[in-house]
Length: 212
Image 1 (cartoon, helix red, strand yellow):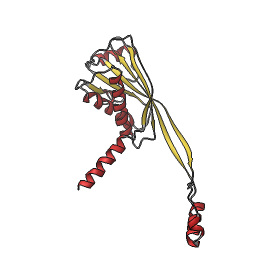
Image 2 (cartoon, rainbow, N blue to C red):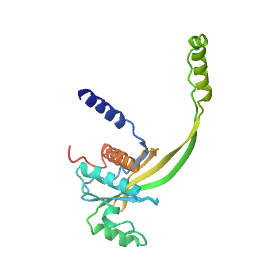
Image 3 (cartoon, rainbow, N blue to C red):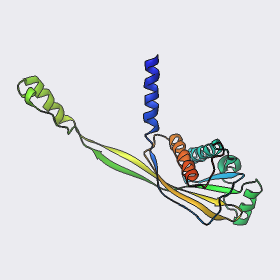
Image 4 (cartoon, helix red, strand yellow):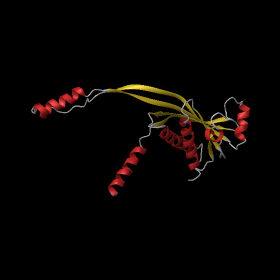
């Protein structure tokens, strides 16, 4: 039992270190004095037929903001999927303000690319001295190498951008761009993204970790 627990801990450590997402660039307005926001709305601008991608991206970022003490809501969950369509700017701002929101973090899917690449077959080298002197060993080794062909795989890259806007001034306070490479699911991508963005905003004094 103890051995199994150790193996589980090792696997968790390995998985935590294997993130499919990374920050490529970020910017913050150094002229703006940091302030404590009372309610932050996370708004996903994602043109995907599957609504679960937007839901996962919003929900995980909301959850990570709540973990550090912020009152945060998902625009999709709170307002619905089409509440900001065909609405004038001023009406949208008033709608947001009326619910007590004083900051908005957008999540925009800038691009999604599929790349096809070739994975070569078995190309490693090992000495043949033993196999040359043993017919079947030589035959088996060479046969496997000759017949282990390569194959093609398709990888998907997601290019994201998130902006933090102050609703009172409507100014851009912070912007960050990221890449997610072949995530195993939108759930895991949302989890990685939320933690990564919140950590970066804390490190750059955009947000405060209220539970420290």
